[in-house]
Each structure stands twice: as structure tokens, then as C-alpha cells.
Image 1 (cartoon, helix red, strand yellow):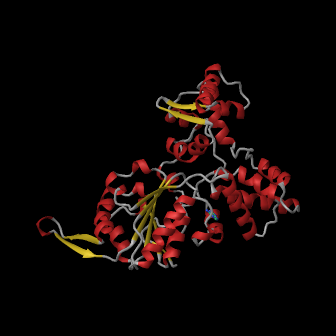
Image 2 (cartoon, protein in one colour; image 1 turned 60 degrees about the vertical axis):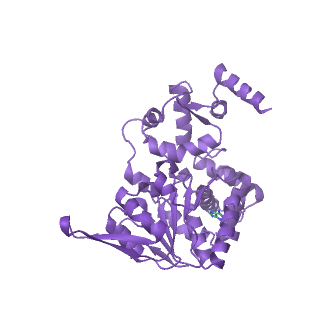
Image 3 (cartoon, rainbow, N blue to C red; image 1 turned 90 degrees about the horizontal axis):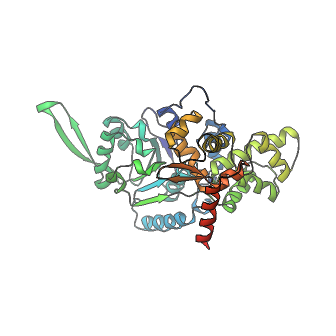
Length: 380
Ligand code: ADE
């Protein structure tokens, strides 16, 4: 597999979102602003990019988790290869850090083709798209991260490219406008987004596979931590691995970052192997609690409970109170808090669950507790 960064301005050579969201909407500043510790951010940092290259699995067999998605890809890749055709276009969606870019690398590698990496916002003008498709060869994989941020013009130019493998070029202006339809090599488009709902139906319908990436189970994340520790030559006991996996928020990018932090802590303290106590001590130092929550997550829950009586409260109000933009709260913080059952999304806004009250050692109001017991009865 060869990796080719696209030649347009904002392209990147590897990794997910690349801070794109932060560029688009800077966080609101001002009083009350809480800077999220970068330890638990699912956004990719420059150091993640460097290290991820060596940690990233390159084959499907080495890829841990997302088992249903993996078997589907295994079948489709094998079928496409036996027909000597490009794989059908794929859309990956889900929270950041779950492996969308890694899967694009794996797919290109399994297909034995080149991978071209770019992002939606960097394909603004028609010439960005034309330049990009010009580089493609038969069977190549084109990965567009943050595909929901493609400009309308770029999106419309892409339609015939992905559907019929042709590109419509126009030259001249007014009466002298001419258009030409040029064939391009058959390629596979892999789109990635944290916001599937923001994609137009027309674009979504053009993908042969639309796949949601799920948070990783504790068992899967433990395997990833074990694999990463072994690549980085960090000695860890089973319980040390489990402590890190439990605080990794179901997200490989975060779990791998925690491994690196624990490694540094152990090295600084000259202690080895990393056992449960050492791992917990290290992560407490970085203010990552036993459920993987950092100070900003806890602040979010505190605000929800203390300022708004547990909700329901609108996402914009909640985000403004902690000094974040609502997009970041919605895409980066909230998915994990919802998945862990600390926040509930209701039509009237976000609500703290009894689990959130317990986590912060607050007394839940009776209405919350009766909701929980009603739910427990329903589940029986
Ligand atoms: N490193 C990051 N994500 C991984 C995964 N899903 N499997 C193996 N190693 C990984």
C-alpha cells in the first residue's frame, strides 16, 4: 500500500479529524471556560499522529473489535479482489477515535492499492476535486475525512465521479462555456464522519456500505492495550492492562494515549512492570477517574445537576455554561457519557441519570430514582 496525501491545501498525511472541528468553530472563550484536558480528548493530537503510525494494525486479522463490520469487509474485499474490481464505496460514521482512518489504511492494504487521504473542508473548489481525481489510478482508495463538510460544489462534482467514474469539466464563461465529460479510473471512496445526519441523502445513498463504528468493549480495549504495550515494549500485568482499558472510554485512540502516559510515569518513577496500582496512580495524576471521566466531563455533569437541577437542559445552554461550543459537546464529550449511562438525551434536552448523581456522590431527586426503578421493572 502506498499512501498519498492529497495535494490540496489542508490535506493531511494520516490520522483522523486532525483538529478540523477545532478550526471550524473555535471554542467560546470567556469566563467559566474549562479547558478540556487533552489526555482524554478523542481528537487526534500531533503526537497521536506520529505514534499511531507504528501502532496502527495494517491487516484485518490484526484489527481488534468492530467484529460485524470486519466480517462484512472481509467478505466484500475478498469478493472484489476475486473479480479484480474496486471495492464498493464505504461510509464510516461514529464518534472520533474509533478507527475510521485506521480501517481506510487496512482496506487499501488488503486491496493492495494506494490510499489517498484528504478532508472535506480542503476540497472547496472544483479544481481541488479535479486535482484529486487526476491522481487516482485503477482500484485506488480515496479517503475523505469529515465528509459532511464538503462544499456543495465539490459534492456535486463528486456524484458522477463516484457513480459513473466520470468527471464533468467546464471551461470558459457565459456563451463560451463548454463542458466535457472525462472518464476516470474506477476507485473506492471511503467517507468518514462524526455527523452522519449532516450528510445529504444524495451523498449517503451513493455509498454501497454505510457502517457505524461502535465503542469498544472492555475486553476489546484490553486486547488493544496489550498489543500497544507490547509494541512499545512496556511490561504490564493483566490487572495493569485492565485499569487502563477501563479508563480508555471505549476508544482505542484514548487507550493508546493512556498507555503512553502510564509508560512515561512508570519510567519516571523507575517502576516496572505496570500493575493495577501503578496504572491507577499514574492515571489519577492525569485526573482520569476510574470510569475514564476527566475534569471536563465531571464539570459537565456537575453543571447539569447543580445549575440545572439534573435537566432537561438544551445542549447550547449546557455548552455555553462550560464555555465550549455545542458541536464539541455533542460530538466529543457527550457520546461516551450517553453510552456509559450518565446522560440521557430527551426531546426537551439533556438529563443527568441516577448513575451521574452516584458518580458525583450527589443525592438523586426522588423523580430520578423512581424513573430508575420504573426502568428496572420494565427490564425484568
Ligand atoms: N490500535 C488502534 N486501534 C486498533 C484496533 N482496532 N486493533 C488493533 N490495534 C489498534
